[in-house]
Structures are given as structure tokens and as C-alpha cells.
Image: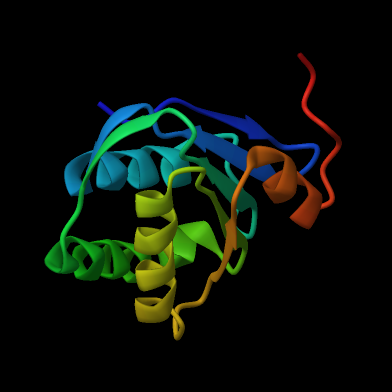
Length: 129
């Protein structure tokens, strides 16, 4: 099952909530679902909200797999920005490693320590509630 996400077409952004266990299969299913969603448009940005992650089950090979998925779906994703909002140190470190591997990818990766920071980086209004 993919992680829950919402697409805000008016702001050209999707927000993905990584809830619970995070593994390569679930991220892959989420990316595939998101980029084939009828509301998604190539070039939209994403925010990956890690504030509800409880377990991170990713290894080096998994990061390479995710980079391959990005390349396979580049025609659907377009050249947007992928913002990772990670509050736990382990998620921040994994984001740093992934961004180093992805430095030559077509999408820009931005690391943030909160959703408020992530929204600010993209120039989005503050979240309601």
C-alpha cells in the first residue's frame, strides 16, 4: 500500500505522509501511484513528511533502487523539487545520503527539519490546523 498523499494542483505540490514503517517497496508504490495520479502534472514539487515515520528500513541497495525508479519515471515526474521534511536524526542522515546519490538526477532534492521549513522553502502558505 502506498503512503497517503494529497496533491494541491493550485500550488503545484504533492505532500506525502510517510507513516509507520518505511521500506523501499512502499516508497516505490507511492512514487508510482503519485506520478500516475490524474491530478499530478510533470514538474510539480513534492514534500515527503517524515514526522510520522516510526521505523526506517532502507539500505544502500534500496537507495540505488529508488534512483532507478526516478529515472524510469522521469517523463512523468518532470523537473520539480523533492523536499524531505525529516524530524528524526536517522531520517535526516538517510536524506543526506540519498541526496548525495541523487546529485545528478533531474529533480532537485532539498532537506528540511520540519514541515514548516519545507513549506517555506517552496513558498507555500502555512498549513491550516
